[in-house]
Length: 111
Image (cartoon, rainbow, N blue to C red; front, side):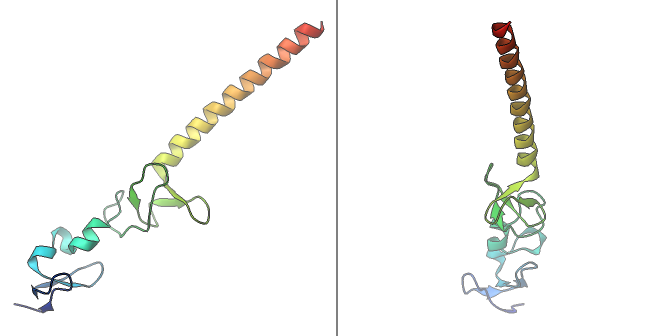
């Protein structure tokens, strides 16, 4: 039973994409009732919503719920942000140790 014409190829459409509402034929209709265009743009993290951007660190596609806005332009996934936070904290501790060592060296050279 055809419901119209596939908006992707012009063949007889059998279904409507549950995300974007496109009429699609069997070749462009896939699991979960999603068309092939939406399937290629699905969030890599939740697998449910359409992506809005890529993580600036790992490059995976993510939706508004799964990515964190870093500034006006960039977004990052929580996994990468956690990794970056850990690296920043390790660098901060290393810098504190280095400052402490320099201070001790200065004290010993003055005495």
